[in-house]
Amino acid sequence: MHAGPDLARLAATVGDPRRIQMLALLMEGRALTAKELALGAGITPATATAHLRRLLDDGLVGSTSQGRHKYFRLASEQVAHLVESLMRVAPRRQPEPAHAEPIRQARYCYDHLAGSLGTGLLALLLRKGWLVNDSSDTAGKQLELTSKGSRAFTTLGMDLEGARARRRQFACRCLDWSERRDHLGGALGAMLAEHLQAAHWIERRKHSRVVVVTALGREQMAQWGLRLA
Image 1 (cartoon, one colour):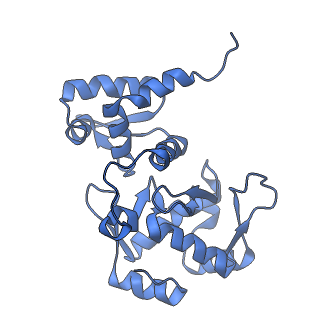
Image 2 (image 1 turned 180 degrees about the horizontal axis):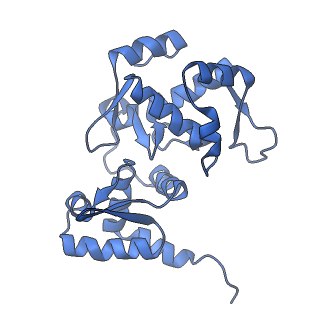
């Protein structure tokens, strides 16, 4: 047999309901302890430890120790994309209208903004001409920052050179599982989310991926041309 990716192993790892729940919890972008992951997945700490060992062995999560605690987070942006992709194709248990679910309105997709807020922001940036499709990308996923966009983001105080220096894609489309449209991913998407939170345009709910747009944020985004429901 030819050497290659062990897809069967990966499928078995993420196919366990407790392990995929842990990965979904880590999509908050925060580092969590084994105890926190056990509580979130509804299992004992001992069982969580065994599941985390499997996730570590398969390179899906990473860990760091601080004091007496060990913290776990998704190993990479690619793992976050994997989980988000599974969310897009997974069947819905109890379909509800979008307005009934705050997570559909605004949330973090690992470290960038998703939901109707995220897709609305990307549509706005394209409409303003701050971003355009990268003509060299035949897959149509990569985005290119225009000189107009560069000036605008720099005026906002964003460190574009710092974003480009990150070891990841700079700006790309990421298909949103709830909106079925693209939101902005990559280093630029992460930096934009960081900026909006630092400027108090958005607030993150504690222990949740859900984002709340503040009154200031609604006012400022309306001036950009984005009116939120």
